[in-house]
Image (cartoon, rainbow, N blue to C red; front, top):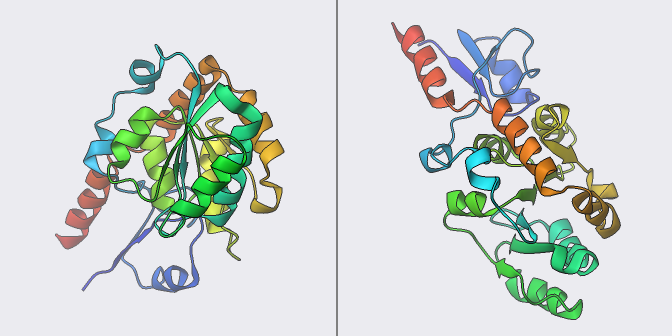
Length: 236
């Protein structure tokens, strides 16, 4: 039976490097994981792909910059500890939707209360990610492969905080968007309230719209079709 390997991350792990030797076809979501593999992207949910393009979604907005903070189902402690302090520094220049992860809601809400920032939306989970992306002007999050692919498909600027994995997978996932001018990577040791506040304060709405367009340009919205076409080709 022929093997088709799809590497979701920007750098291949040990298992996929081994499997690539026996695969009939190797596909990759981001350039660089395998030198000669076709870049097909990661399949993304249809509701994210259906979002209006950045020019339609963002061009007419006014008021505070909308910052979506995504910690994932388990949350990200560094985001939960740092972002309330960012809110305190920027005050009414931003409004936050902060997804904190399982079991962290009460403690993060207390942090917002401690710094006098009680007007932001703080939730344990987000059930409708497409709606959250539609609301946001910019995202602050980890850079797992599917998260990066969704953010590109949605056409959103981002501040990525890669998880500190020995292979730096999340760094390499985010790198194409940073190289395109659509995102900024802040490594976890450098992720602090002053750095994040300074970065967000420097991004006005025209800048964010330009970054959003660049993110969308990097996206591969037909990734599902590309992967399916390769599977059909190999199966024949």
